[in-house]
Image (cartoon, rainbow, N blue to C red; front, side, top):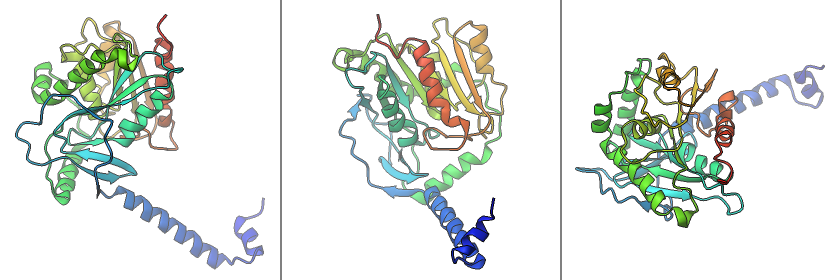
Length: 319
């Protein structure tokens, strides 16, 4: 096979010029990647389909909801009023099963595209009624520069081993978010006939902080009772498994800087409790891979999750 540099030279492109062009392309790609990495304030997108959950405004909130773009995704922060946005499947595809989608962002922001709307659209296209939960968040500085500094500080200690979650601490620390997730389950059950959803087949999937909320909803939530749950790159510390624990799907990358440093006690806990558990540990993918297009096998998590839902009868109408 000929050297591509020689082939291009034969077309009148000198090696010097070719090198210049390649360097320019590389610089442009790096510039685009760096630009995508910058938090850029944007107007709030249309949310006319969002339904307020009725859990009230976040107590003592000073900063109001704002949006920014980063990594090609849209993020919400300083969410003070919780909402639920339905993504319903076509009637001829609907299985009757439903799932609440909880985006992540360290309880300071929400990755609404990558871990919310895009996930919901994909599941709805397969017959699952999906509902994106925009839950209330911890307050952050209204000033973007101050917010960026706060997030940098939060991410500075990524290698520490996640502690075992304490139920009482979860109830206290995640009180607004747990109230929002419980209200989401209640709303879907209330409108089950309207949305053609089986009230006994409503699950929850969460990403990072959203996975923490999913687990807390399962472990200490009072009335949610999810039919299935999915923890996507969330903490995997050992827990006390409830007697009525649902089937659990877990996906994590081995190079995740946050949650790949533990002993995967959550998996063992579910196994010892003899509850259904499926665990996918991908070699690469980092943290927050979600629906981003990547050249890693972690992009297969959605296909694996769909197959798992089908195995549990969630992709077919209930007989």
